[in-house]
Image (tube, rainbow, N blue to C red; front, side, top):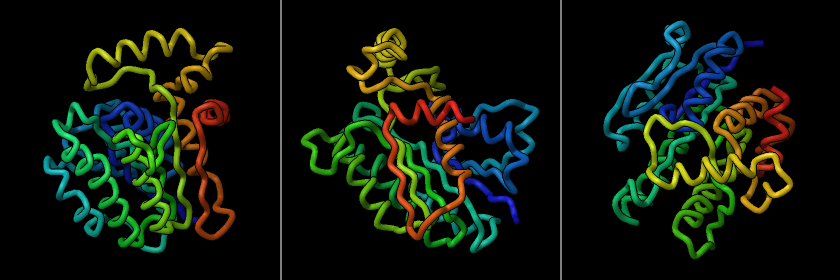
Length: 236
């Protein structure tokens, strides 16, 4: 049985960088590991040689890169997206939707059309809902539904609660608040009050574990919330 190849979008973010680090350490599980990003991801120099990095500063050009990938068609490829932004970082609601939804969906569609990926793993968020009155949750919910409609052989959607851990690029004061209070309540009886805070490493382990399991049915859909993500991460 051939080994799957893997492509990572968002490899410089909190979840993506942890996922890249994990699959690099377990590189014998994969035929190829490829990243697509605007800046070079930070990984151990010893594992760096096992990773092919595609750098493209304009994310609008990312979908075109999927057709160029030197990966086998009709293989067991895994496409992982931990890519995302915030309204503040995007500068406006319109830019947020263009980046967080638009780039993600266009890349997922390109991945599907390339016929090189059977499994898609999307890092979404707790409370994602296309009918939400809050832009962030609404955008994530719409992205989830539209990606489900692409009908990958398997779609894995992870909905973490507040994310804990060091980011290469901080999202500001809010990051410190989340890490302080999230870390304090994590694994306590009150964790549910904060939607079960979870580390970037735990998200990565959960994604890895689920993506490595056999596909059990046509157009398999797995949606997993933060509390169960934490439990699943312990299996790695």
